[in-house]
Image (tube, rainbow, N blue to C red; front, side, top):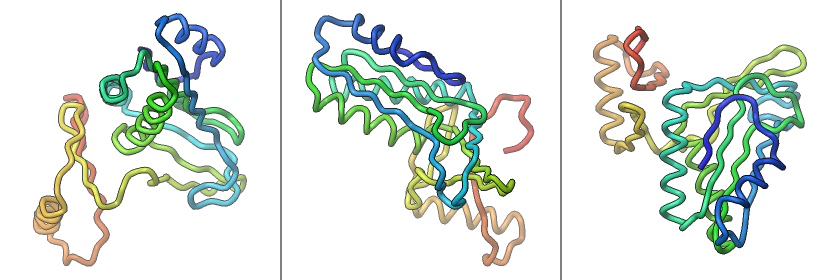
Length: 194
């Protein structure tokens, strides 16, 4: 198993490495995320800027990889995610899943990328040719609400979400018409913002 954030490694070398991890591998599925010109909001994306809470992101990626290994009976898995600025056409994510059979490898790759977008604190900002910027919010289901506690994502019900938002409105003396974006993360002690 290999988890990495930062500059992506050589894909051919990763394939060779994963092949050597087990004699029981019958299929390897490779997912490659690539920067596209038409973004989520902006039509002329030049750069995607990625940021991550590295400590929590690595822990969450490892947890997702462990889950995939157990759920899909994988022989091995590699997850690498780029952090920094990537231009159109550049690769930003590698997910390699190795299993005895192709179905498990395909299902695991899909599970990993979906969970990565949903649970891992990696953020991307679209930057257009003209300099417009947009933080992308795709990949996180609107109906779900997550709280990260000590690096673990916890799903909470819509009812609890509304109670938390009501408490925030009350504490901030808001009328209820304001847009509130609430993110709660477990942070190192030196972080002041909650």
